[in-house]
Image (cartoon, rainbow, N blue to C red; front, side, top):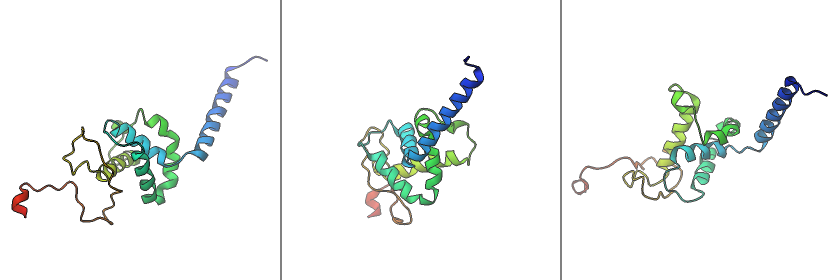
Length: 149
């Protein structure tokens, strides 16, 4: 039996569909969040498991979007290395997701409270939800703390 180009393409296509189906059933929505954090904030010093803990809390917060995030988990591995972020237009769903994940993670740590020092080890405080902690504003700084008292 001669191996034709058509048979090779059909076999490759079937393999890709099989892998994607298997990954789709086993993929966890947290994978996409962790991938985004590792690629965008991997240079920061964080304790092991911090990204995973935040990802679990983020998925709980975004329960209505969990199915979409699980579908995006199919591309979580390649997204750790490369992203189309820079070529996506403003307002694109993937671009908004990346911005939301990174912003909420930084607000969930002591990053801004300590002057946005990238050399300092980050401490995870807890998931930042403005509806639950409305008075917490880690970005706000007083120019003269003595005169504010």
